[in-house]
Every structure is written in structure tokens, then in C-alpha cells.
Amino acid sequence: MRTGSLLGVMDLVGAPESVSIAREFVKAKLGKDHPALDDVTLLVSELVTNSVLHSNSRNGGRITLALADCRDLVHVDVVDAGGEAAPEVRADMYAEGGRGLMLVETLSYRWAVHDDAAGRTVWFQVKYEPAHGTPSSPWQRESADPACESHASVGVDPLPAEEVRP
Image (cartoon, rainbow, N blue to C red):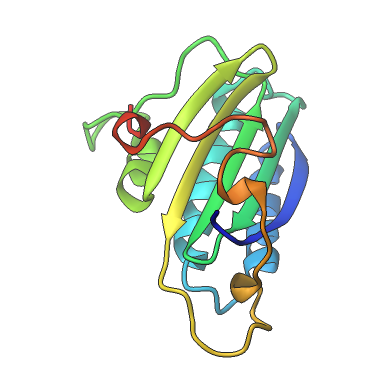
């Protein structure tokens, strides 16, 4: 079993100001010295922006952000009310949209989209090299946490690696 810890879950309002709140949440939970901080912060920003702009959570709906550190990877769930169109990566660098998911595709170890009656979850994992030293660093704490094995925050199991990238 992978060890780690659920660092936090935050409910956000489907409004533009939630993007910066989500970034600050990630920075506070991971800490300024976390090796995956920059990538995770950027990808959370992209996914929360997508929820604010494109999901049925826009205009004041609910978006939930969950963050877990699993010793050698950070796992993030962004849950919203879903929408008419499924998120997709656009390979065209000059396309009007879709570059956010291209960043998720490029920077994450694994990621996927899951739709159900409750809404849509877009999750990703960013790998990093664990620091050696005292276990006082947030990313070095060990505890069995189901969020590191599956999507405990939303009850979704990760897809096998070959099925992760749409």
C-alpha cells in the first residue's frame, strides 16, 4: 500500500477568484520547499479555471479540490458539476482553448476524467523525488491514506496506466 497523507479538501465557488484561492491552498498545504509545488500549483490553477469557465459549477456553483501527498507523488482531485462537453486535450498550440489540459498531459505522471451522477472529477498525479532527512517535512510524513491508492475523496479508483490518458 502506498503511504502518504490527505493534506486537505477545500470547497470553492465557481467564480474567477477561486483560481487564486486554489493556488494559495496548494502552496500552504505543500509548503514552499516541496519539490512538486510549481507543477502541482500550475495544474490546479488550470483545472480550477476549466471548472470556473466550462462546467455547470460556473456562476457560483461548487468546486471541490482535494490534495494528497503520497511520498513520491502528489494526487489532486478537482470535482465540479460536470458539463455538456467532455474535457479534451487539443494538440493545436494555436487553438483558442485546450492548452490547460495539454499542460496536465505533459506535466503529470497520470491523469483522467471521471463523470458520474454527482458531477465530474478530473484528477492528476505529479511524481517527485522525495527529500531525505527529518520526517517533519509535510511530504515525508507516513500514514496509510486511501487517497494515495484511489480517489478517496470522490470514491473513484484510478484507471490502469494504459487507460489514464484520454
